[in-house]
Length: 194
Image 1 (cartoon, rainbow, N blue to C red):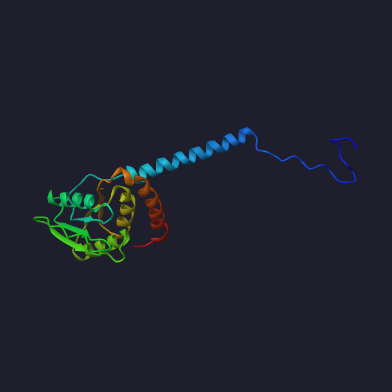
Image 2: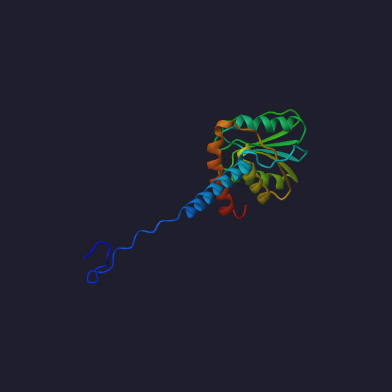
């Protein structure tokens, strides 16, 4: 039997493997590239340069806790010292290694949240605000945490919320983006109520 012919008794030749044409590969690469750029743009908007507010006069300032505590504490204490609020609600985080700050002419309320998370901090501050007639609050998170902090504060606190972020070192940006994507997703999916 000649090469390249079909043997009727033995069956048909194996069909050649189908390969995606070059145009399809190009489309796939373009779609993946567009998704990557969208991810980078969304990460930059949400966690590197998030929407925040200008400082304004409120009933209380809430300082959240975290790995960049000196930056947050400095920003919150500075805002309180400049007279933006008569009360500074200051989270000591999961441990009490952070001293409670002293700000002249400002009532400083320090607390350890339970659980020791952003949600725990916002819940505690919201309960304190309800009990003490606080109707407006300026939240001071880290820059990468600003969107999530606003989301949780607006969900838990029934008054006006402003978010004034504290700066973070550039070296922490990659870690913060990965962490905040997971934390924001968890907040959106799991924390349906405060």
